[in-house]
Length: 421
Image 1 (spheres, rainbow, N blue to C red):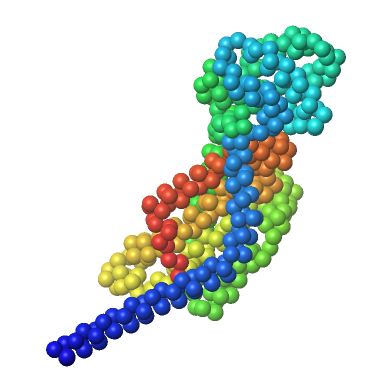
Image 2 (image 1 turned 45 degrees about the vertical axis):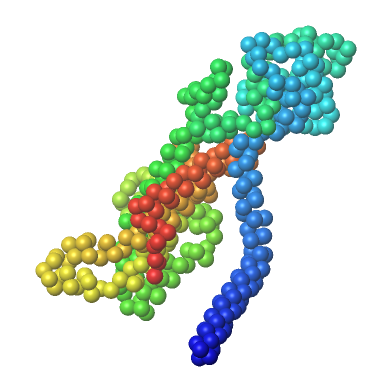
């Protein structure tokens, strides 16, 4: 009886020690995780301030439009409740617009609102400026009578419909414009005029250029990676320097170098003419050829390194065994070696393609009028047109398409499971 009791006490003490040990281990792990989190906080704050927040703000601008609402707040509030869009809004809306325009002119907010409205209809800016210039002369008069007298467009229902849409703080217009669509007079989404369609073609052109560059990089980079992976270490390390050196040179410098080489009287044409291969300079600049050459030169090291990282871990024994069993060397290479390099091919293809999608400097310097990529249109809207909403919409589609491409690659080759080395 005493022995059984002592055994039970010992068993209880042992379980208690095990539980205490587990609790102590878990507490130690929590402390380590908390310390690791504290060490990562500065990096997380830096990423949030310099990467996540700016990109999130730009993407939010694709559905946000506050210029008109801030410039004419009374009018925006009244137009929000204007349901009968088949007739002109009531007199208080006219009066509110007159007061808002005068206040916006004094506060300096009219220019941005006029620029935003001009995206809906060319000439809206001049309409607002003309109206606000003549309104002080009409003080004391009824605005619903004076505004149409100043300009007959204020007596047109379509003008007020567009003003109502622009006065909303959130709008799908930028996302529609980025797909060459717009909201028609009847409130349905329609395609813009063929002469105004440019963004869908730009997306297709961007994908075509990126795919072409990716294919060229794969054709040129795969043999180089194979050579580097199968040479003796000393020779391989020496040749690897030529692959890595371009990373030490500025992207702008490398692109400018091609600008010098490819021009009609540049080094390439001069050498070809001197050798007698051609009699007049080739057109290899300010067109698609120049863009492909420049982007391939810049992105080729990424393809080489991605494939080399996989190839260096592949033993040559398998290919030799296939040849010793009677397979032709080419057949053994295609059936035995190439399938083992698919992770490198997939990683390199995805990396080069995604990087090419967002390229700006090289197409801008070496491309022509018909080679504009989406990144150039984004820069144009931000820098010259000051249309941040449309720039944000183009960025949203580019990010979404990149995510779709990633999911597609992941389904085909499993990018998230690739082991490079």
